[in-house]
Length: 67
Image (cartoon, rainbow, N blue to C red; front, side, top):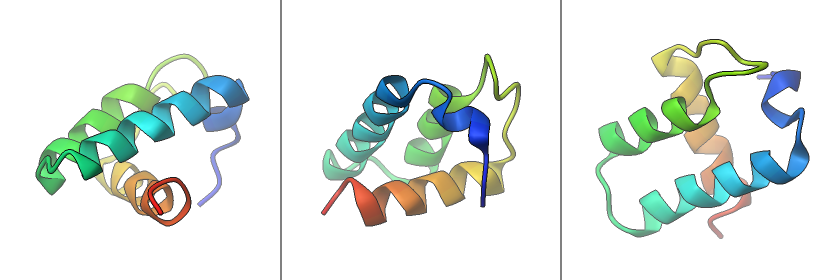
């Protein structure tokens, strides 16, 4: 999993990851967390993401930002 465009602006990528983590810690269901992650990371340098890619982002965020 490597999408250089996801971190074109590091501060924005960190903010998005923290928002995904907030959804997780807030008890939102998995479908909503993935949907929100997809909408947060799409656009600009990443024109679209698949549902599987969004799920991979959520997994990476859980492992790195939500500990």
